[in-house]
Length: 204
Image (cartoon, rainbow, N blue to C red; front, side, top):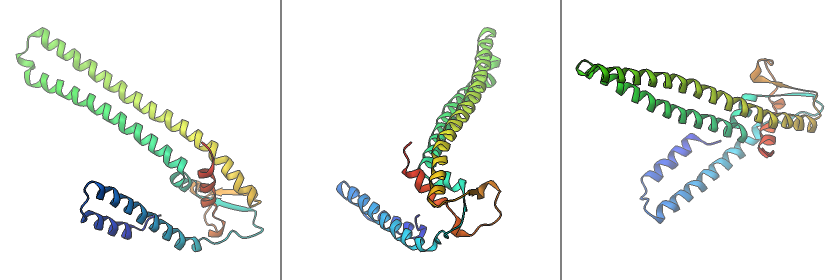
């Protein structure tokens, strides 16, 4: 976890410092070291805030939304989906621009075109419009399929992680706070960090 204020101060200091050639590389290394120190200090400060899991308790809870958002596997999946969406949006954007250019050409010059030229242009516009609609549908389908595939892959790592935590703590039940099945829970029973740690340590 990063401290926004400390990170902002660090960024300002780096911006007002000359960064040429070797200096840029040194500054980048210094920034990484400083951020690592900030992260370490943050972890040290926050660690005592996590209450120990009570002995003898047979149930706990996790926030699966946090697990998906903060675990390495969940973040990687989100990045892959976002990357695909951006690529598809760029492709569709190019098709939209081409279609709009043809439509503008028809609007501005259609009246002075020959009949055959106007018909050819109208047909091109119609084909491009159909191609655009299919591209949008295909893109939505591709994103959906990737999302479903990554969800299955994430489940394959999540379930063993839950089982490991449950076994280590001798639990009978683990509830999901994000699923609406739990109104309140003792913070000491929160197993979210344990599950994230197990997922990060597992092999994809």
